[in-house]
Structures are given as structure tokens and as C-alpha cells.
Length: 514
Image (cartoon, rainbow, N blue to C red):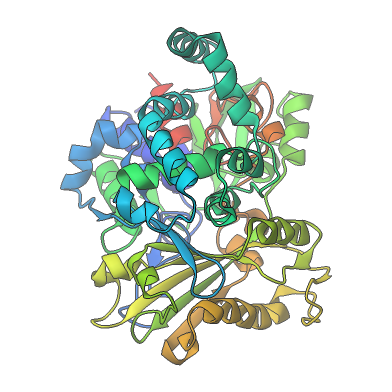
């Protein structure tokens, strides 16, 4: 019997690769160190029975629009995959009572804009979005390999010409602030869109970050957003069911300690102390963990790159079970899936600088998710779950930007940071604390302890700055997931096309196996 294709890690990329390969008749085995599959795409009762909280990822729009779902969507539906469509994807709460929201209704979106010129610009951007999204989406959907990349660049040049291609290239190198200040008048609108950059380690002044506010804003307007029915783990459960339906196996509580190789070729792994033979291995591991498992790869440049790979600042999560809706000062905010809490683009820039300096930010940017507004199955009748990310915070604490928290370790800093987060929400929603039935706070180091790929609480598995993106993700010369060891490929958010639930690297890797 042929050795199975081994996949290390049952995160979204590993499961997508396994499902695609299994559907093509390949023998597949997924090895997961944790007690349950899913990685960052899991849903658990973290507070009280009946309250289902997404542990990390909540937005499944990228997965719904992925190449994998385009190919296997019908079969995934048979295994229970179901999405909940959202017509009001996000809003920004700024000065208490003031907000700006993006919905799939253009008139409703424009009604929150303060500038007539910005309204006209937004409409022009929407008209241009299908063509530009085709180019940007095509880039994100192209493996960083000589043939596919050359074909993409040639098609782009033929479509846009030299001037248009250079304009796209300049946009890809722009910071969120540069693009937003050149495009919009209203500081409120600039703030609302710049927040999306912070989801992917792009503070307002970091080059290369403009693409994410653009895609999320225009995509939210054009298509809305989707979440998983009953929880994000609906995707994980459907993927596992699909793998098993085709004869594959997902083994949990199975920790790989070493990847074996000889004469530059993969030969297997050691998992739970036993040797499993394999000549094809897909490793969904953060670079430092991959480096530790393979030792000397035979390439000094690759080994150095694995060890010096830079992670983004950490995230703190707060999961709340509420006795009713959030009492927003602006009641309209109760109708949005995400409410970003942050007063200005400069506040976001300051928060990022503070976290990078090791300081607990005085006003962390908050992403407040309200999934049970659209999917009541996630909470008992009349109740609500709240999903809160504090972006960004340091993994190692050197001080407090506000001068109030004296703790220098997360065990002692978690409680006062929780209060700081609740204070910021209560500025926009007085009385929130009175509706909290139970709360679970998770520090960045606790995120890492549960999922070692989230190094320092980095939920995107590595900075996406220009020096570590595109051709340089994770290491120059290996952006297609290859390693110096034949038969061993990297997958996961540390690889191109990076973070998110689109599972691009897992699907690319599966397609490369014939």
C-alpha cells in the first residue's frame, strides 16, 4: 500500500488541501496536535452553555469565494456547509454616538458620508471595482511561480496597458493613509476604511497596506459578507466529513516532533513517538516550528529565513455572553456584523506604535463582532454573543502607555486590559457591563499556548509588510511553498497569499500534487 500524503496541522489550509486531494483519490492523513481540528476556524461554548463563540476567525467571506469552494462547493453543501449572508458588514464607531457604516445598499452607505465629493468618489470606485477586483483578485489567486505569475502579468499588461499596470503597482505599494488621503476628504471615512489594514498588520502609515481597506470596503459594499451558520466551525466540520467520505483520516492529539529527510528528500515524520513513512508532506506550521522540526534543510538562506521570519503584534480576544443586544448610543450599530471602535486614523497609528514598543495601548483598536444578530442559533433566545478583538497588543509587556497597569506579564495584565476594552465599548454603548452574563478573556500568550502557530498572539501568522509578502513570503526563493527538501511543502498563513480563510496556500499545494 502506498504511503499516505501527510498533512501536518488541521487548520483551514491543511483541511482544504486534504479534502481536495482525497476527492481526487489520493491517500491522505492529517495529523493535528490539538484535541479538535480547525486551528483558528473553531467554535466553542467559551462562556455559558448555549452561547457559541468563534474562537478566532468569524468572517468566512474569503472561504465562500475561494477557488476550493468554486470547485467543491456542491459536495461541501452535502456535508453541511452553510453560510449566513450579511448585508451590513461593518461600521466604524468614532466619537460617541457618531458612526459611518458600509452596507450593500449604496444609498444607505452614502447617507453616513459627510462629503458630497466623497459620495461621488465612492460611486466612481464602485463602478471601477469589478475590473480592478479582477486584477487584484487574480493576483491573490495566482501561485508565486514563474509560469503562472508571468501569465498573470502578461494578461494584466494586455488589459491595462503600461500606464494602468504601473498605476496598479503603485497602489499595491501605497500605505492606507496615502491612498485614503489622496482619495477622500472626510477624516471619518478615512478612519473607517483604514481600520481594515489593522486586521493584517498594516497600520495607517505602513507601505503596501492600501489594498486591504480597498478590497474590504468595495467588497463589503458590492457583496456584503458571510459567516458560518451556527459558527465558523461549520466549515471545519464539513471539510473533515468530506475528507473522511473519500477515505482520508484526520487524527487529533497527534503531535509531530520531527520531519524526517535524507539526501534532500522527505521520508516521513515522528508523531507521538512513532515513525510514519511519507514522501509527500504538507506542513501547516509557523516558520520557527518548521525549522525546529527539520533541522538543517541544506539551504543556509532558507534556514536563516525561517528563523528570522517576523511576526505581527499580538491580539487579545474577549468573548461575551450578553443578556440582550449591545446598548449602542447609535442604535443603527446593532445591525452590523462588525463594529470597529476607534476614533481616528491617528489613534490607530499610535496604537500600533505603542504595541510595537511593547506598551499596552491606551486605546486599543477594537473589532466588535455581533454574529448572533444575523445567526440567532449562536445564542439562547433573546441573548447575544459578542466577539471582540483588541488589535494590537504586545506579546511581551514592557510598560503601559496609559501609566495605569503595573503588570508586566499577561497573567496579571489580562484583567485590567479587559476593563480597558470594556471602558472603550461603554463609551459607545453605556450600560454594556450590566448586560454581561459571562466573559472569557484570552491573552496573546494564551492564544499561542492553544495554537502554537499564533506566535505571540499573532493571528495572521506573520507580518504582511512588503519585505515579507508577495515574492518574499515566507522567504525569497520559496514563495510557492517549496522547501529545499524534495517532497516537503509549506502551507498556511505564513505562505503566499497569506492570512485569511481563503486557504489559498493549501489549495495551491494540493493542485501541485499530481
